[in-house]
Length: 133
View 1 (cartoon, rainbow, N blue to C red):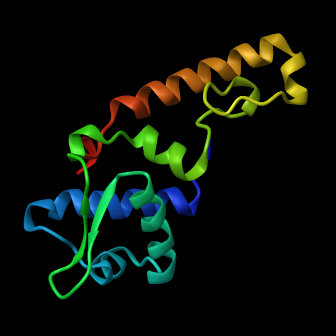
View 2 (cartoon, rainbow, N blue to C red):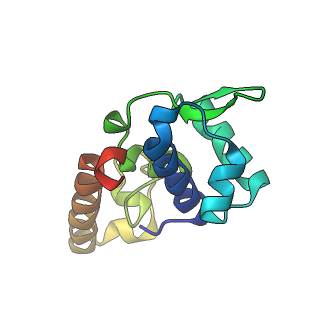
């Protein structure tokens, strides 16, 4: 598994929202400035998060973005899967994005990669935004 910029920026933005959630809606400009994220790119990422039910938006001078669910209920695994797909090192060991690959014929190799997937997925499924704030 390798995190893309998509996942990294998304996680940074969600951590920012979790830290500032008690203040209400957060302006996208504040998030972009704090983490050096291009605004247009973050708008695209937030569109995906909004459609996934992770954030709420409000227009206007008092508007912005905030978490739609408590930070303690949002795992890192679900966000990474939403943005990057499988947590597995190859699709032939993925539980959610399985696809046959040439490596699937090598049973011992698949077993090792399955162990790696289980460790990574297990750890990221235990971690919530609260744990990294």
